[in-house]
Image: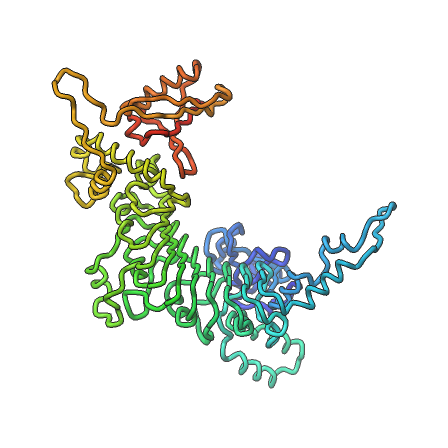
Length: 580
């Protein structure tokens, strides 16, 4: 790639990359002198920080950078304005022999000189280049693509591309500005210099996504991630075959998505990660319409805090997967008929018969701020929801006062995949039994503390239904104490079979021990027993509960809690480590 050395080739808001590193991409924000430094400088606001300043130097403000350390001044010869689509294509797809190819062409002689044996490598390259028209998938990520190139060049060389990855290039415009042709004609009349005319042609060609798509009639999947796309979507043709569009980290907001949806009649997957989206701004209604084929919507790593914004997506009939990991949601609920009616108001286009989220099967909510059990229970109301992610939320983190996995499994009646792990038939049955027995062992505590983390309050029927349902389904009767005030009483949960597995370095490799323990055994008592079982003398044991489906074991640090309190049931495994 040739670097640009003439400052006239750069313009404000142009996307550029470092001459020596196509992955270091930024936007031109200033061109001109810098006090105390001779010559012309280009002020660049880099996409990834790690620069020098915020656009000011020695008390003088030259431009506004996005952060305190994302701006720097660069000489023009150290910046590259990019190359055409086809130039990048030849670079990526073997325009010149690679070391691997050359290894096939030569062997080393005894004097360490290369001796040609077969030109298989060259023939392989020529064969690939001669059949580019057969290529159906291509990745041109981080190659500095800034323009489509000559008219119809793409359709002539790679007409059958179906999947195209343009991640991290210098694209910014959806469609070439209409006035470009007129400006070019005016310039021809004024300037006769072929060199300047050639430069203008390059500039007016623009970073035009629409032109690229128009030349690829078979294109069904397009990735534009990490390109800073313009907020003006004008003149873009209908992308009639695009089924997968990836716009992660492009700066796009939902207002532009409302424009794009009419140009994407068959879109099935739309990825919008990391765009700072905090609201679903609809054009003329409180509910998002259209997207008749949209099956997957990825809104991960955005800034959505209000669940009411997500409810605007509830009428998308084909939506099966909704990815909301790493937003700012703290409460969710399933909308009733009245809620939807209030949202749509007098919208005549709203279909009263449409059930909210009627085909949603997967809802990813990891890494949010959800901490209430009502949000968990509401997931049972989604008609077809079976795949749920709640990890990295307070409600699902026992270390932050949340509930263990077995309680989530028990309360989520239809979940088949939880936090990425399959819920087996055995895990479901065991989780439900443990949960019911746990609730039954704490009736007095529940009544005194109705907001207890994962025990449903008897005076709050809306939280109690799952316990009652399970108790009846499993045929578990309330335990009755023995007659008489002085005689022994039957334990509510009997003995539990618990496997103790040593992972402590000082203990060494020992076979696991399986013990029958009363459910009322405290963690403190279990630690004392482990000291005896594993002959620990100089250190105190540290215990962890290993649950099926959980990626990390749960620390058992409340010595007053019973085995039942912390979710230890039959066939549970406790890891025995040592205090450091």
